[in-house]
Image 1 (cartoon, rainbow, N blue to C red):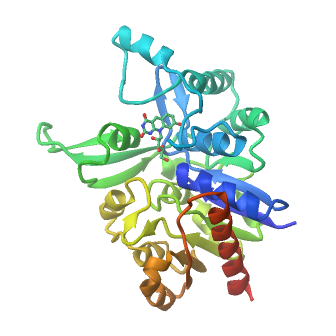
Image 2 (spheres, helix red, strand yellow):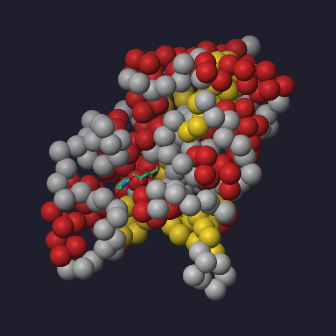
Amino acid sequence: MQRIVVLAGGIGGARFLRGLKSAVPDAEITVIGNTGDDIHLFGLKVCPDLDTVMYTLGGGIHEEQGWGRKDESFAVKEELAAYGVGPEWFGLGDRDFATHIVRTQMIAAGYSLSDVTEALCARWQPGVRLLPMTDDRVETHVLIDDPDSKEGRRAVHFQEYWVRLRASVDAQAVVPVGADSAKPAPGVLDAISEADVILFPPSNPVVSVGTILAVPGMREAIAEAGVPVVGLSPIVGDAPVRGMADKVLAAVGVESTAAAVAQHYGSGLLDGWLVDTVDADSVRAVEEAGIRCRAVPLMMTGTEATAAMAREALALAGEVQA
Ligand code: FO1
């Protein structure tokens, strides 16, 4: 049985996984989920990317939105607002709240985030093994200009940058706070060393895949696994398909192009890279950087189109191995 490890962020990672499962239903898929987007609100621990993967693969996701639960209501949020308790800018629904209550209660009782994720997945049956990148607390912060503060700059939580500010201001720096002392969660390094192929879905290269790679030992384990590592570009036609990758790429000095993202990961990590057909011109630059590259359609318009992308990624993995 083919063992596939996928480093996933939120919406892009989850949708890619749905296509991958459809393309190779018999594969054993381990997902290493980004937890840098996690946020503590109302005394609860919220793990947006783990939940997005779990709900998407478990059939509970709000399809159009890409995050949160379908058939959602917001009575708790409205009641909190009536008490003047915010933040109001973060849309936590009633059904979703239950997930965060269970998670927080289990963590308070001494369980690890890995244990909790396994327990939550027992309900959702995502059909993959979903592992948080770490059980330790990591929080991505974004440094923005703030003329009103003494330093002229201020750090905000990634969710505040993305959801409240809608990435409308430039990101000066992106810091995965706590990552340097985090340990990979149990099972993560074993899954990598036992993998037949490792995939980077079209997730954000800085705040999703980049944060996972920032956990000490992760990058080395992937490089040393000795198996094909293939990524799919989240940048199509010099712009992110969704999200704010352009803003956070600029913060780390990387252009928003499919080729620049491949070069950012580098040939020490990546063996293969898929770009969209509109970026076919960049294939040569990527190959010159020592990374095998193909141009194929990369818009995840539905499960079949996404499954085709997954098949292309696995075919490229086969090619680089040959
Ligand atoms: N994204 C939004 O654009 N607005 C929200 O209010 C919002 C709330 C939210 C609540 C739970 C959850 O799991 C995800 C949520 N997201 C929301 C998505 C999230 O901000 C990001 O898309 C991911 O963190 C990036 O991967």
